[in-house]
Length: 363
Image (cartoon, rainbow, N blue to C red; front, side):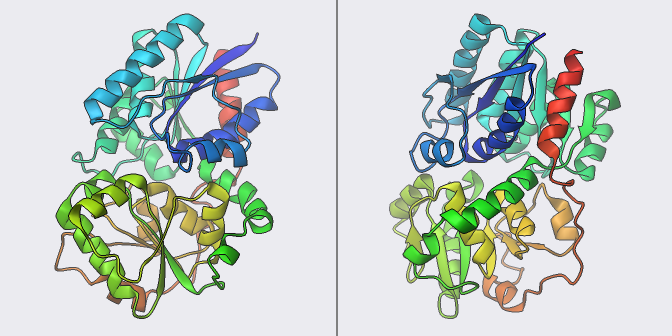
C-alpha cells in the first residue's frame, strides 16, 4: 500500500522542517509526498532560495496566495487547498507549526475527513492576541496525530484533553536540521567574508512578528534599543520585507545598525553559529540559538519555548514594559549557563520517528 501524503507549507520555518521530513519520506518505500506551497512567503529570498539550497522537492502545487489581512489570506488558502484535496484525495495531510497555511490545511482536511498530522503540536504562548496562538490551538484540536517537540508540549496537550493515543513526543525536527545543515553551512556559506565579520564579533538580530512590526510603539522601542547597542556592538539585521516597509512608513532611524537583505538558510545558520549572541522575535531562531550554543534575547512578552527561559539560555524582553532592564543592560550582563540540557528537543532523529508514526498509522 502506498501512503499518499499532501504536505502544506508556506513560510520559511516550514520549508526547513519539510526539508528534513521530505528527505525521510524519500527513504521510505511506502510513502509518496505531494507538496502544496500556499505562497505565504513568496519573495525569492524568503521562499525560492530555500527550496534550492535545502534540496527540498519542488512543490507540486503553488497556490500563489499573497500577503493580505489574516481572514482573506486564510480563506484563499482554504479554498485552494480544498480544491487540491478534492482532486487528489490523499491518504493524509501533513501540516507544520502555527501559520495561516497550517490552519488552512487543517481546516480543509478536517472538512473532507482526511487524517491530519501536525508537526510541532502543543506549543502555547498563552497570549491569544497572537494569530499564531489561535492557529496552534485550532490545528491541534482538529488533528488526528500530534507530534509534540517538547515534554512541556506533551503535557499541555494532555491538559487540554487530547487523548494520549493521538499524541507522540518526537523531539524537534529543527534539531535534525541544525545538525544536518550546520556542517554544510560551515563549508558552503561565505556570508561572513562578504560582510567582513570575525567570529564572535557581532550580534545577530531579527524582527518580523506582527505583534512587533504592526505596533508603532513596539517597533520604535525595538529599533531604538538595537541602535543603543551599536556604540559597543556590531548589530547585523537581516530585514524582513514587512519590517522594512513599516520602518520606512514610521521613518525610523536605523543609525549604525548593519542592515542586510533576508538570508538563505545556510547563510543564516552560518551567522548564528559565529555570532556573539542573538536577539530575535522568531520562535525558530530562539531554538537555533540554543542548538548552536548561543545566548538569546527574545523580543516578546512570552515564548512558546518556555524551557529555554527556565534553563537560562533565553531572556524575554517585552518591548512595551518600561520596568524591565534595557536591552543594553541584558546584553552587557548576559552569561552562558554553566550546564546544558541536551535532551530538551530529542536526539536529532525526529524526522525518522515522525515518518515511522505516519507509516504505522495506516498499517
